Length: 611
Image 1 (cartoon, helix red, strand yellow):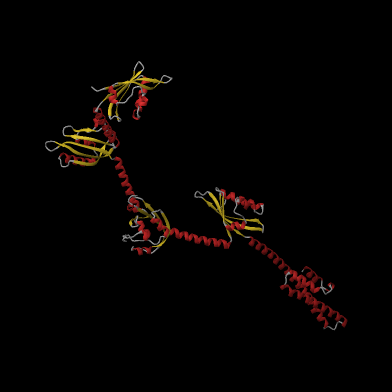
Image 2 (tube, rainbow, N blue to C red; image 1 turned 120 degrees about the horizontal axis):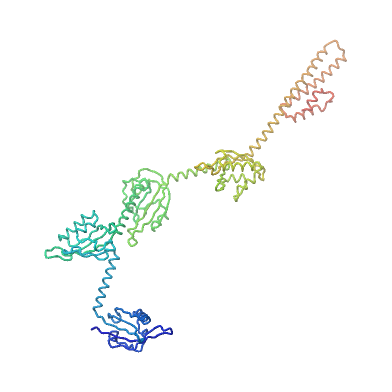
């Protein structure tokens, strides 16, 4: 019989009557043998409890307070023993603990159970199961983990190798038949294959099956075969995803319009796609052996240092394709290119740097760069033409209320670059009518009621005086025809306006002068004929014998008077082509200032006075 150790204790209670410890009253010899020769009587159990027994002590306290017994079977590492312990309170207020030494039998049973637990845990967590076949019962055993993997109940599992084929993927049947034939004919004694097995959910799972012949019968035929299967579906899915990814990358690498080159960490070229050959203008028949990115001389020193330090590099620059001739490559055409390079280090294996790579992506931006240059030149031409012609540009977007103006616009309106630009411009308008016209134009343009092209003339107030401006405008429309804004070109026409006024005044003055000269010449024609007729008439009377000397002397005076009158008229006529009307009036008055007005004919007086 197994020895029984007995310990009897008194309960130690607190003020509430709850048992908080035990006072050991007595122990028998067997208990001391099992527990060890330790003096326990008269001591509190709480003082005797060691670290690994704390849980057991708490269970004993719970038993003492609840009245329910507590049982355990455990390995005591302090004494290297397997013991079975029962503890319970008695009706007399005592607490009894009985200990039994189980010996090696319990230990072996425990070890087997623990081994099975570890084995089951390993199978379940590795998604694997074991199986066994023998020539008597065929597929006689499957471990329980097969249920969690394939989902079958034990009765639904295949019983024979023939039934197993019903669970296999049709594409794997030839492989399964071949392995079975080789095993049963003893041509092989172990195997490892990958195949697809249908689960209870009608989904095929990838399994890696392996096995070996464990025993042979007297005929040297397999008597017993053992093996295992592990679920590798996730591995297969990853392999498939990797294969698809590699195929996709290869497709992108080959067909990408971006030039792609792959270099070793030492800079030696490993591969390049067709786009790279095309962009660099290098023939695909070129021998790339020995081509090293670190030996290229068209990268500056900073770029090369960063490449050598295995850093990301972005670089742009011009290159001539004939430079590749210096590196033993064949160039298809001589061109000047503007290329953008992006170098990306690929850390494949940190422990084996020789496996790391440098990825180069290159794109051709020659056309874009040339267009940028042409646009820049065009902008400079435009700016110079704008400056020389003194044209100002402005744009106003309705929804954004954004006003964009050129430097010449600011100069013409004498503005600063502060806010409320539109308000400051409207405040400079000369007349309310100009303000009304501008506001009407903006609202009409916003509503789309004006034509695509329009013109507006206005005047603004500046410290230097009025400025007259003309704006030729174009409506900016969106794709749906909605008016989005207005673009305008303004020109300062103040000088033209002043010239127009001067020309109008000169025209009026010239027309008045022409009228005066015409009237003057008409009157002068009469004034010339009258004295000339008098001179001719009186000169003829002087030769007549009908008049005495006194009368002839009077005729002579009249001839002299009319001669002076005629001379005055001729003098005025000689001045007229060279003088304006003011000079004519002055000269005529000066001429007649020495003569008595009563001696002048009345008509000539009137002409002189009008002049």
